Length: 131
View 1 (cartoon, rainbow, N blue to C red):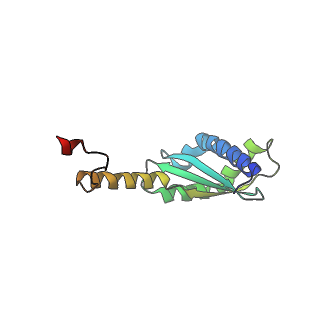
View 2 (spheres, rainbow, N blue to C red; view 1 turned 135 degrees about the vertical axis):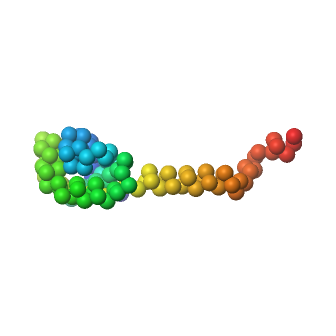
View 3 (cartoon, rainbow, N blue to C red; view 1 turned 30 degrees about the vertical axis):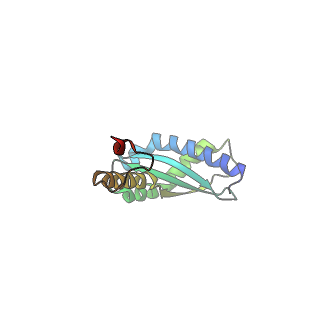
């Protein structure tokens, strides 16, 4: 369970790294849309795990690799924004957040089950039997 300070720093990093991506993102990965979904801080506040959602591309790993290539510049830009708020700028690590992809996949499965009438009728729905 993260401490209150870890949560505060994580939110600060999330907001400011989002701004860094708005400013510099197009130069790094092109027309792909990347959003910061979550940041988790280590207990010593020296590592920020940044979870990213990537849209408009099938090859999400390529975007992550391009960001890794620009790791030092991105950390420097983040440090420039955070320098008045925290003492030591954390190192950053990027991770793909697959939550939305998984939600879409499960939703597609539910629709497929519904279209083939394999979902069954809800137990409270007796209106069709009475008619």
